[in-house]
Length: 388
Ligand SMILES: NC(=O)c1ccc[n+]([C@@H]2O[C@H](COP(=O)([O-])OP(=O)(O)OC[C@H]3O[C@@H](n4cnc5c(N)ncnc54)[C@H](O)[C@@H]3O)[C@@H](O)[C@H]2O)c1
Image (cartoon, rainbow, N blue to C red; front, side):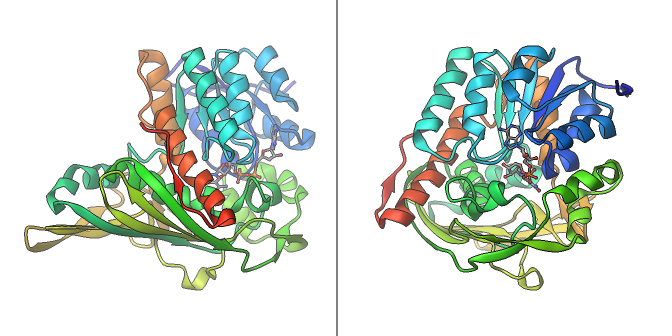
């Protein structure tokens, strides 16, 4: 029996986590323990589940999600598994009446997406679909002033980076992986927040780097005790990469988007940009009377700066990262949306409010990504039907 250590907390909500991988250890376990009660964890890898419970002093662990839902005394569950598994787990959790935080994307297939939305709407549970852009102070500022640029005509957004060095299934499998679901989701989310829904997408993609060396799966299990005091990204960055894998999914992607409001633009997303060339991601939106240049969720500089031109004057937007509560990681500052989301979901549960990134909005974003994949593989343009 592991020792149970509870600190001061704000919400009397009992939570479970499924998927004890990198993001769970880096972000969600500390956040849940800070604000609520982390009652149980679950991972199909028994050793990982058991060690996670030991290291973080969590009452119980499971290797089967259904088992955790049935046996653990939990009000809410955080779904942090591979991207193609989320929708099925949302359906199961909703049917069991659990409130849900689900990492992006909500689904990687349309039939699964529909099932997830139906199950949630029927169960009337609270669901927060990541990534939460609605609470980010930089994006909020952009959405408040976007009207000043007049009619939005076009935009460009992009995020090229090196590939993750872990998570073969999570990031490189054909149906569940790739930068489309993993990275483009951030820009697509932000663009739909600022410009409203998308009408159609056309995409191209290819596998540019067909083989990669990853860190052994067991490496994280053996280094879990360090995750209490050190970022798992750092632990893994220095690990030997000794396991060669084949990349099954397009790792170099571009989406052309047409928005309902008439703006058109491109979202670039890839895992093929060497670390030393990667530029901080941005979203630029150009309108009839001005433009917005928005820094996206990370920057090398503690002063987060973008630019806005409205009515003929160009102004630099500078926001002190520290005063925004941005966290530093390897010289990069970023908005900790993970912690903000956990706190927001808990607030919504106890005050009976709907989370801001709603299930319909999450479905719209997932549909954009799924239709982009369809477009990439069929060569056709695709309409988007979910609205928020
Ligand atoms: N790692 C990050 O920095 C990061 C950041 C933002 C978002 N995310 C998202 O979080 C999710 C998880 O990413 P990660 O990096 O932690 O991946 P990961 O591969 O490190 O962890 C996923 C975990 O889920 C477990 N799992 C898989 N199927 C399961 C099942 N059916 N039941 C129980 N456990 C199961 C795996 O064994 C693994 O431990 C993904 O959707 C990813 O896009 C990750």
